[in-house]
Structures are given as structure tokens and as C-alpha cells.
Length: 71
Image (cartoon, rainbow, N blue to C red; front, side, top):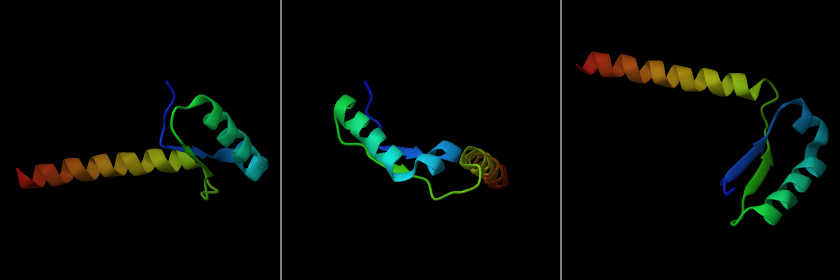
């Protein structure tokens, strides 16, 4: 079953495909997913996967540090 609440298209292909690609993905999701799914193109022009990974890693380190300070 495919039912994500949000699909974000990123990277060079998403930037090159733009709105037509977004609309095609949206139509495919409507045909195959049981509920409405929002499909958007990222506004992040840098490497979104790398930036997301860095953000997740920093959040984990921050949580570990705060937990250790509380103990």
C-alpha cells in the first residue's frame, strides 16, 4: 500500500522537470494511492538529502548532549 502524506521531489531531476514532473507524479499518486497525497518540488537548491541527513544528525547529537547534561 502506498499512502504517504507528502512527497517532495528534489535534486537535479526535480529542478529540470519542474511543474510538469510534479503534475505527472501527482497524477500517478492519485491513480495508485488510497488517499490524497501532496506532491511538491523542494525549494532547497543545494543537496537536500545531505542537508536533511546533517539536520537529523545534529538533532540526535543535540538530544544526546542535553540528556547527558540532565543526568
